[in-house]
Length: 72
Image 1 (cartoon, rainbow, N blue to C red):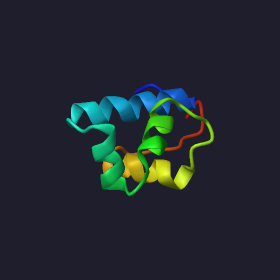
Image 2 (image 1 turned 180 degrees about the vertical axis):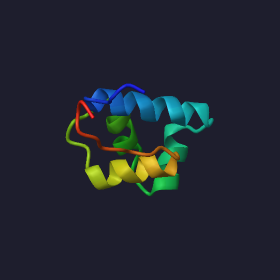
Image 3 (image 1 turned 90 degrees about the vertical axis):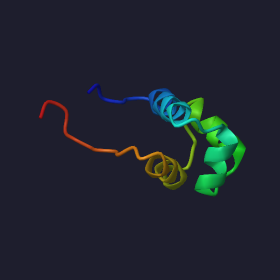
Image 4 (image 1 turned 180 degrees about the horizontal axis):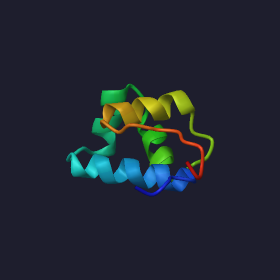
């Protein structure tokens, strides 16, 4: 598994999983209680996306986030 280092990489992972699950951006926004604009911005790597909302989207899609010190 490769580390994610940019907001664009997080957005791409979210987009890939959303599509794998057959969800539209609107479907995902409704499931997460966020706006369609937020999902679009998140998938496009907008760096100012709110962390709490981004985590809600990741959890809703069944994606886990792990932090590890580089080199360990």
